[in-house]
Image 1 (tube, helix red, strand yellow):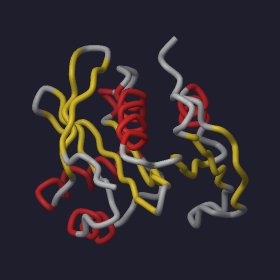
Image 2 (cartoon, one colour):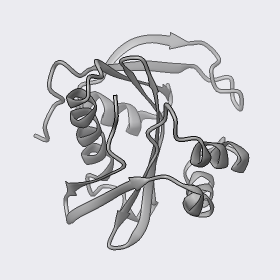
Image 3 (spheres, helix red, strand yellow):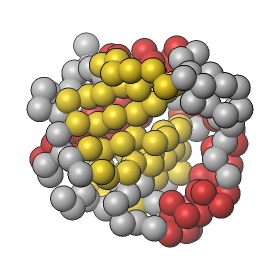
Image 4 (cartoon, helix red, strand yellow):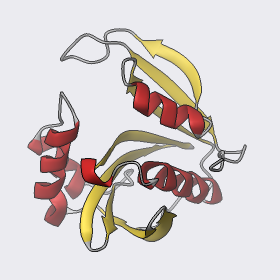
Length: 168
């Protein structure tokens, strides 16, 4: 199942381009990771993701020629696992995350994936609301999943056979 290395999608103020995440993006992605997360991925992990494209679908988002976000996915059989998604704070609330996830879900379905899955911190109400609005369903809880705090992760699942919810 081959996924596209480049595509565009609409957001509230125009179009955003997605490109394959590579070594040339690492510095910016590391900075964004440190801005967005209380327990950021290490530079080493982010460099490894940029170097190893097999079984991964890692993307950077460019809007107005600025890197404004990224999304890291792993491909496992018919499952597309969303590992991480981040948007520059000044670019949030413009529909970038939802537009990207909708587009990724559509492209994944077209290429034979059956579902998307992700983990989200139980306390991350904004992310949980986003995923719920897109049709993700609660699958189960992973106790003490986050090593920095011991917080549980909620595992959410999106069956791709059912179309992803459109904006209301």
